[in-house]
Length: 248
Length: 340
Image (tube, rainbow over all chains, first blue to last red; front, side, top):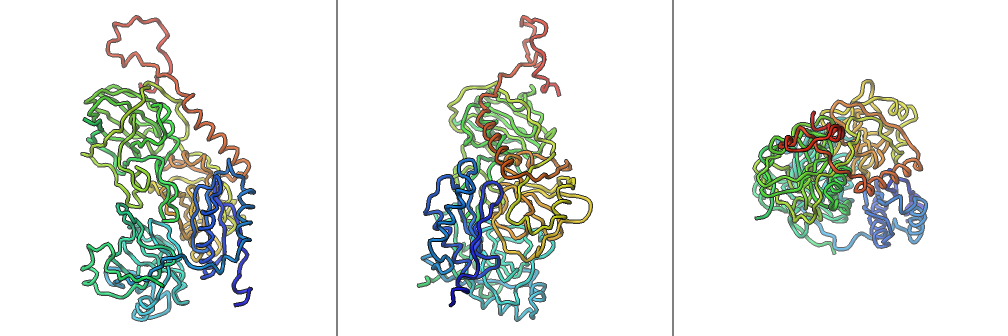
């Protein structure tokens, strides 16, 4: 790759409200920008900057929360700029300990009422939509919105479909929703602007467990088509029948 | 026997809250905690205890409770009518209640969230470092009639302290700063936003509140296709139909709807306490102005214990009044809230 493609975007640091900054590695979702965000977030945590209270990657950015009365915005900006200059974050490696997880998924029918609408938006038949989605091996790009809830991508280009104008009142836990070439798999029942195309029995957030969060950024997932009977069989399994293997 | 507060009746959506769980943003867990952190600090001040003590958050109205042992309690946040065994209690103050006492708390007279604190705090198990129910995340649950809430060991002793009643319970003007998506809205849209008088929708919860207005919505460039990005409490997101939503402490951690601005932290207590139907306006301030306000708000928080004054008892509520030697004029004034 040329340096122009490996560094498609100069990182920018912008204030987020009064007590945050956002360090962005892109304005569209690309794999290098996602790698950069994950690696830079870990690096900011390792730096242990005084008065930085929290730090978390989103898809292509890192949100840094700080106490603005004890750490000036300019000082923080300078510290982060120095860290940005230390290496090419776009070529950072993925986090260690990644896994490939196959999750049984019921597409459409009563379980996921917006499959037809989503297929139409993606310009394919319902059968082709299910084939494309269930064959895609997508990666957890970030965890956010709700506890342990992943954004996964990228889907084929025809899935660059917008969110709905109105919010769906509630999708259930385990709902697979789609928009802008990404899946989100819901860890709680929630309103959403994304279209509900599939249903799994996976419990992503287990607040009483020693390991409350099932998925981690970098994990890869395939939402394999399954029948309603298969899903019902896994109703009591927190893994929802998922098959897990390590990525070497 | 451990002290407890037995819930006889309670408003839907009431929950035990502390200052929430920081540091789990990377796992998708927002801080949550008390919707009005200032009310938590006020309760801690009048009870002379740590702001880490968990209290009962009462959305819109209270309930009926019974103390299984002598308790110190405090009432803060949205003012509600309250009584112990029929005798009215002053709001924004601490009180001693005897074992077996029946505490009745009615509807809010203004504001949204009232708080019932106990000396020692409610002793719920911590999950991810906090006793707060995070209703959106499914951590803990709303408190129900029949629940018995264990009270922690109470090391303190002050009661009968009160703080001046605040005026943050009727909406008003909220100060906002620009955020990283503000420039997705053109100048005209931003100006129209600050000139619009909004009314808080009846649909509001610990995650956020919908803001209604007449006229057209507030559209952003590329509105429905932007990447999901980190959310801060105070962000005002514009959903697909152009309606603003103010996001609060228990909101999602990321979201794809564009944010037009962010309410400054010092004005969030006023924001969350805005009752349904009350008017809200927004006013952009510079970063320096916002920092000055923040400094003042933090000073106020640390000054709260010094601002506590002893409650003046209302003679109408003293049962053995006739045995007192009364001197004309000494009991007037500060206790008028009790006569509502």
